Image 1 (cartoon, rainbow, N blue to C red):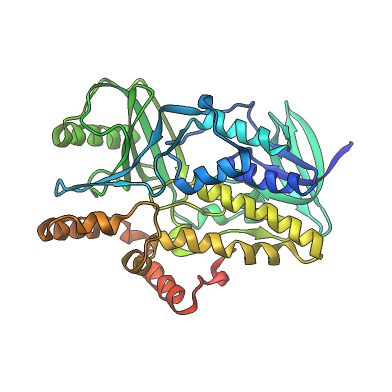
Image 2: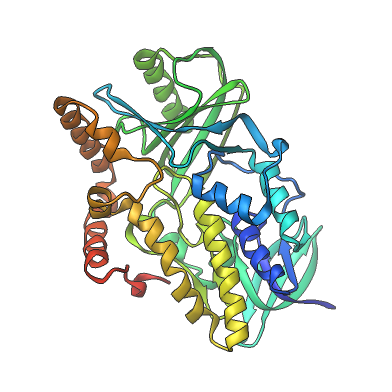
Length: 404
């Protein structure tokens, strides 16, 4: 059987893949992207991009065309809602950011990266012999073999590449289900210019809403195995009673599983040998569950690491783990209580908005946040967050020894 030989195989056509492919192609590498779906493919995502992600796309791929955006096309910021009925709107630093239609934005970015894309091609397995990586994939039931110097897993939370390198990993972390329903609006006082998030332990582990294409999204995250319809009905009743949001019956729903934990506790997964793992497959996820910006940047760092390793004849994992530390700091800082209190790791100023409230409302908000965080107690993340945060303050870095 003939092999397809290339410099780098990237699995997945995500934004992490686009960031990686762009760096590699610009450096003269031959790159093949394996995508199991036909493009443009559907992607479950809110689509609210952070300012940092917007800058990356503009600087690396050019101005965003209208056809890759939802309506409203831009989002001004985020509004936090609390059980005490205090709401805090916060504008993003640098102004409004795009509302991406991931089906078309991902397709636009991967095309502009310059990499060759093999659609309807499913990654099956790999074998790294130290000099090259042999990949087995399937297309229309037929086996296809690739040989590459490097492989990058940019294939999301349930990464097949990560599973090939660490077969038992998925059993070692908690998984969450995230589902969103799309509903026609009867009445909705929520400001369409903002992404709305609820710190309410009785609603779910992650609860949000925003406008999209004339409908309202209601979304909720909960432990895997829970009932999406039951959680969603609870959220819908709450926003109707507390915020006056009246919606028609849901016309459409979508959901997927997520790995929320690694970025909180500095437990990232970066691969082994000549296989690199990046984006959400590696564990990157921002605090308001925006994973696009850290996917783009971590993907680009994976690409830069391959270029530097090839040019310097150094082990690619050594280079990658050195360069990726900056993205680890940026992402995990968002969950670090010392960074939240004494600096500003986010792209909207929560502290300034909090201090604009009167003292009574400030106390209510802080109590609400504490009650909300307690729902994560069964995962025993609190002590790990605190210990990693202290190490960050003392050493200026998070412990790389915790990474796979």
